[in-house]
Length: 222
Image (cartoon, rainbow, N blue to C red; front, side, top):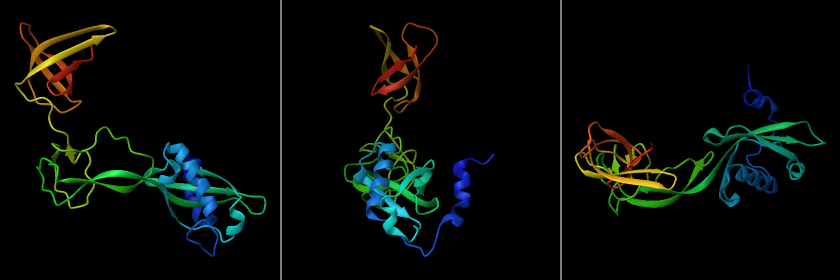
């Protein structure tokens, strides 16, 4: 079964009217920006658009009712216009938000451990809803491939430094409610933040499996 959003994308070329204009009226753009920003929970001032085509009757579009449809994958959405004076029209456009982004300040080779002069922050447009970022690249991160100057640095092409070294002493933390226990152990493998660590606890048989949560600290979920 074809979804309504898929049907709109299939029918879009036939719904766009000519002659073509490459931008919408400013008031309409502002209203669309507010709606998209509310959906994405970002500042409307940060929203940027790339328009396909808009119907030529621009004056009537300033007060036209509209709705925005689509998942926003890679920023692509559909603007559906409704007015008393014209039939329903739909236009494909791309939306994104300006976001501080970490980029390479110079060409960097694979295997580089990032230093203070290897990174800079630039404002870039991220097309689509804000990405879920678990951590921001910083000094000490390791590159798994080469980066050109100005290229965005992000996981998984860059990884945070290991918090746990194989064979190193660790604190094993367990918590439930108001009860907190800590024992000392030895890590059997290296791990980065959020990765699993097998731990040998002195005086105990078997191995525990915990999660690296800080330098030299692992946490048991149970």
